[in-house]
Image 1: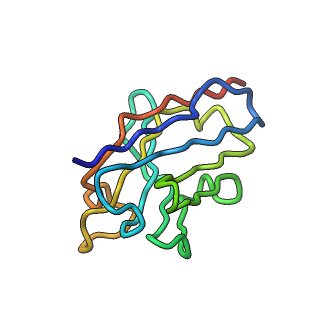
Image 2: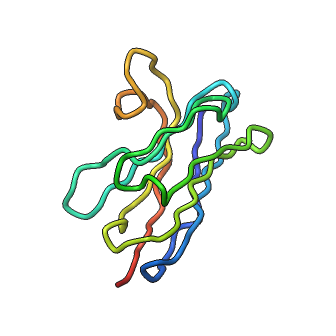
Length: 125
């Protein structure tokens, strides 16, 4: 059974930083791409960032480019999301997800079959 567990969320002032972690178990972590999504109150869940199995390829939504960095440590079965220069509009529940489909791209939720429970990030102005 695959389990994903996020940590690292919290309350931070605008301009501050947080690092989210997502630790996976249940299948060989290094074989799969990983994604980060977020959902703000009253809004649909949206793509934030993704990283391929080796870490060689990363992609970001435009609103976080230059501020967020996704990385992974396959020896620790963990993917990270370093978030700098945080803005109030980054406030959301952040989810990590593991890829299970290869007929969709990283931006699509349908690509991911396993999801964490989410971690709250709140950025105050």
